[in-house]
Amino acid sequence: MKSQNLVKIVSACVGVVVALLFLVLVVSEPDQDIVAKSPLLGQPAPSVASTTIDGEPFALERRKGSWVVLNFFNSTCVPCINEHDLLVEFAASELANANAAELYTIINDDSSDAVRDFFTKNGGTWPKITDDNGTIAVAFGVARVPETWIIDPNGIVRLRITGELSAGLLTEQVNRLREEFVS
Image 1 (cartoon, rainbow, N blue to C red):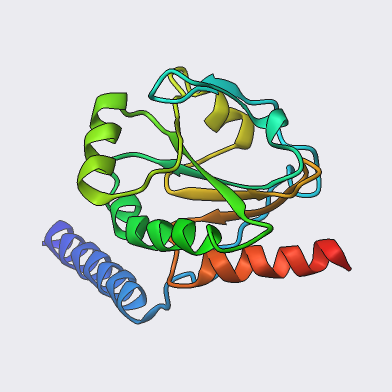
Image 2: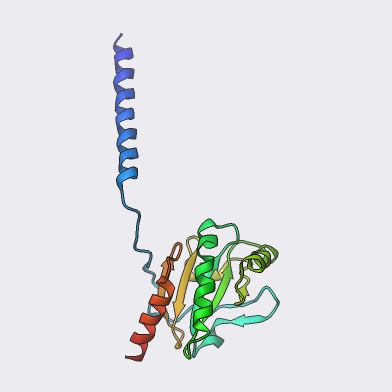
């Protein structure tokens, strides 16, 4: 009889704990701060040498003098798919800027063919950089895609954005950094 009562009490306690955890998940606000810290901020960008999916060489250090936006991407990643139209808009708007940022997609754990098919269907003419063995992702400390990094014309890492971009965020951050860079 005592063991039956103990089982009922333990079961009730577990039920209460599960209900409280569920309540916390329901009422908690999602993390809105997607601008993330990194030991790379304010430091020279890691050395990146690879090729595009079209076989063209790519070396990040050769991009000095330009604002560079690196977007780590996988064609099956739902947040990557969701933010893609925003990247297409960003790239188009940068074409009109005399101090345009160069956008590059870093392919994270995906095939070149899958990425090529995705961009053919969804637009986006900027270069797609292969990261076959994950060294670029490791060098930048990418935890999961999407992640977006902004590098200034001196090759210094200025910003890391984790998670899916929201409308206008990338343009806003690049413009803010451009203003700070001039001052």
